[in-house]
Structure formats: structure tokens, C-alpha cells
Length: 341
Image 1: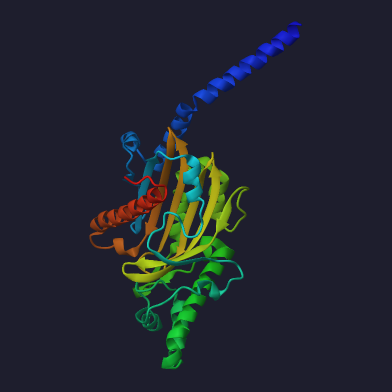
Image 2 (image 1 turned 90 degrees about the vertical axis):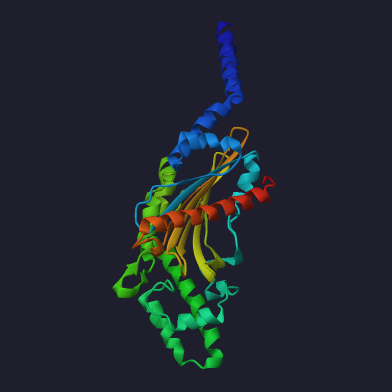
């Protein structure tokens, strides 16, 4: 009888603890989320600003002279389920803006994967005559391959350049899929210089403190891709076409997503951009916070345009441009969720 009584008391105590824990998760969860926000780079004052219902943007530490790094966090009075549903979309990225065409790359898709990607006559002509420099992001062998097309008849040259351009893009995808960042060919510049997105993207991955803290297995896989991803992580290879500095650009991406306490964490790596910047990485996620959801993003982008003379001024301007783009992306998300003020 005593044993049964003790057993009943123990069950009642455990149920009581369970009820108490269910009744007060907000404080514990908020504490955890605020710890994560600190790791993202926010200070206490910026975390407090979230209650005002506006996105909070902040600069991140930059490691190299060609890097622009920003973070943004937004608290939305929307359920985590609704926000996570939007962020799980792969193609196009739900925070992307100004996309004119897009698709998904697969191992056997070939150059036909870019059937909807186009080139203007001016861009096709420029590719045909391109030289080492910053007009296009191409390797030395890619530049030489376009020069071989000059013998084609004027009537067929534009279509030939477009087809070859699509082939170069798919070759870039194949190389990355086989060898990860190590297989990304450098961009040849004037004066026998190279820009190396392979180094930039590994630098960005190494700087992912939140990823290393909460997802160590995924962090290692991100660094060492194409080693296998941990269970529960899904990947996709989207491409998008958009205007960058007034010129069309087909951008190749690698995206990995995984669930996180009912929310989602997404890693995106732009391993090829045809001009204007070299590469980019962003980490996007959402978690339950207070009575709604906190959405966050870290972006590290690399461009030769912020180096050299007046680099400090160029970085200030570049960060503002990056911040404006991130705000525009988050406004798009809140519009989809019906929460824009």
C-alpha cells in the first residue's frame, strides 16, 4: 500500500512539474533565443529594439578588405508555423527580390537547365570580346573558350554565345557539386591577379558562430561539402536571374535547410555570380519568441569594388546598399505574411 502511495505521489509530482514547465516556456525559450541573437552579433539594446516591431539591422565584423557583412533581425507577431512555411520554400528564395527567371539544377539537367536564362545582345558581344578584368567573373580558360566562337557566322553568333554561356554555368555547377568550394575556379583579373570565391566562401563558413554553436555536424558538412549532410538536412541547387547594377546576372546557389525547434534554419551559398561581386553567403532562420516569431539573417558578401583607395568609405556605402537590400527582402516576407505596417 505504501509503495503504491509513493508511486502515486511520484507520478503526481512529475505531472505537476510538467504542467509548470508547460505553463512557463516563454521565459526559458526567450532566454535561449536572446543568447542566439547575441551570437548573431546583436547587443542588448538592439535586442530590446525588437519589441518595437521593426527590423533591426547591424554591422558584423569583417575579416577581409573585400567583405561586406550585415545582420538583420525582425520580431513578427505571427505564428512560427506560418513563418517557417514561407522560409522552407526553395525556389525562388522567399526573401529574394527582383528575380526575372529561376530554376533548379540537377546532376543530369545539363545546359538545358538554363533554357529560360537570356543574354542581351550587348552582353553577348561583351562576352565574345572579354579579357581578364572585372567586367565578367571568368577563369582564364573560360575567357579563351569564348574567343573560339569568333569564327562563327554573324547570323549564328548570338545564339552560340548564349548556348556556350549556359554550358559554362552548368560546368561551374558540376565542379562545385563534385568538389565543393575547393573546386570553384578563380576569376582572372588584370595584372595577373585572381579573385578567389573559394577562399571567400570558406572564410564566411568559418565565421558562422551560430552554426558552429547549435549545429556542429551541419557546420562541418558546410565547410567540407560535398561530404554527406547530417540526417534531417535537405539541399537544393537553385539558380536565379536578376538585374545586378543594371545588368542581367545568372547566379548559382547552394541551399541547405533543416528544422530547428519547430522553426527552420537555411544556409545559402552563392558560389557563382557573373559580375559586380564575387560570392555571397547568408544564414536565415526563425524561432518562436515571446508571442510570435523572430526571423534573422546574416549576410557576408564579397566584392573587389570595396578594396583599394578610400576602402573605408566604399565599405560604408557598400554596407548601406546591402542593408537596403536586406530590408527590402524582409519587407517582402512581411507582405506575404500580411504584417507590413
